[in-house]
Image (tube, rainbow, N blue to C red; front, side, top):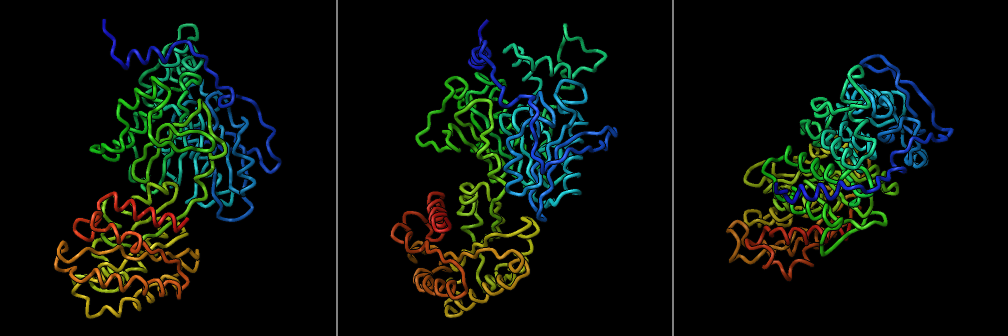
Length: 525
């Protein structure tokens, strides 16, 4: 009988490697900080009290950290996140959700899912939590519970961070059997009813295992459009740890495919998975790092899900575990270059994945003209709506980034060129007097329009725009500075190479959009 490459790899990986997970699946009870309290939360499903460790922030409207215990532990387990949460005055809850995963009511059951919901509800009601700033974090079995929460919670969780998670109980049962570790018995005990379970002759309840596995659940796309999912795995896990990295890789691919069945670029190819499994490495010309660890492999889909395979094993890098909590909320106002797929805004989203960017860019947009007689293309008439929408979606605002001017310099508006700087001044004043600005005081960045090409390569409606834009660039700088805004000049840097970047004189290809975003990044940083 011939074995496939994947089968050989599976047999190789499941040889008798030591499974060392003491740091991330220990049951050690922590001497909890005195600021924390032990609480009991009645389950809204069966009324059974569920214990938790809780800390209420001193200040109002602070983030809420929902930290989920590992596979074999319970709510009293030592947690590396609690002290930093207290120092930063984050609300914090460490729920029990039926304790160790070795009985039918534990391990991803409907009771577990509801217990986590009940813990979030308790923290919101009894702490000083901002209900729009919730962060669910877990490692190993807690990473599994994080993925379960991602697939099931009704709350508008801002970020989900799953470290070395398992996503498929059925596969992990057989993977654990191959490794000869205790977890296969735990899975059997959790998927077979107590009266039918025999420890000496255990077996997997396959239907129950599938029901409790995030990888078989439907991704709630609409509910997660304002959330981010982070998946982290050490490349040696499965060799020196108990959870193969395929549990992370396959789940990432499943969620991406649920968002877009035709997506190709963001999907992890099978050959990449094989290389990582076989070599515990990945050949790449340029490797970044996370904390002090090399990143072997990274993939992301839009600004919704990001996977990181780092140099490590079955572990959480505690120095970065809370990095996604204090991130920026950004409103972008732009035109077609900001609206297009893989445009400069999409490039910013890739670079600043942790930030939440609300993009109102629309093709044909101007600072203050009714382009093509359309009021929707006049930012002065729509900026109040943009500010309100940004607040509704982001629940706060740290930056407002404006890149406009190209369409104001069209031939049809040439006789009114002198009006453009005054319209920008009016726009900035409207932003700064808006209630959302008054409440949050975001930084305002005015970005120059990019260059325009020669008339010979542009549509007639843009003829003469090159000179008008050149004239406008210093005028916008003056207006921005007079109105207390930061100014970023991309025009001067891009002009010498613009002809090679934008074939139509207006819209650069992706490499040009990347250059635009990099200039903006450097200036913002």
